[in-house]
Length: 300
Image (cartoon, rainbow, N blue to C red):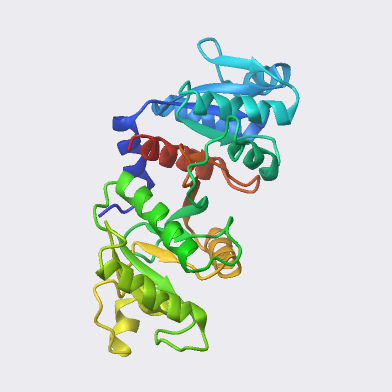
């Protein structure tokens, strides 16, 4: 059982260093996170972007670029293409978003010419370390897929399970989150939950244990589950919370990030390589933690 990001960083030290290509790297908080990741010994960065600005910012934050490759490309679209191409050509293991809009870097990621698509659904997997939960918890999908149907939910779930495996969680417990814990034909997400459980039982989804439908409380609280007579092994002990749609996932993610004393990280998964795609509002620590997740995912 992994309890927090200190363990994740330590595991990344064992699995790394991995090569990280940063698109439009001329961003202070991103460069601070990259500097810290280099200090931890988990990455070897390749900084793609406006070289003059990258060097100016690096000087301000005391980041020594002497042994670090910097590729000068002031156009953010071209910088995104270059960073993604480095990964698709095997010259880097992870791509990270710098000072560039998410839509621009994702267009590079899904390019048929040089991108990282595998044919699978791309999804966002967040990891949280919470004071009131006994282990880290994964939340998916809070950023990419708006209203996933059953097959998309299956792939989103599988992407998160793969990331959990990269963190050494051999059989993660997946809770399919709904508004209630009983199947109601009028509530499609409860029906989907029942179908995902069946796919797991039939061997069509492997490497995890799936339970659902679960309301949030009985997925993460054994006491709440016991009050409702729920005895499923996932109840109160979920590793992965599979959200029904982007509104639910995004509100829950941001509630934890801004209203609790938590640590978090996130990756885009489902591509040929992990994509560190953090928000500008994310802290340097969240960005460092996300890089560490990328290192572990790239080690699979």
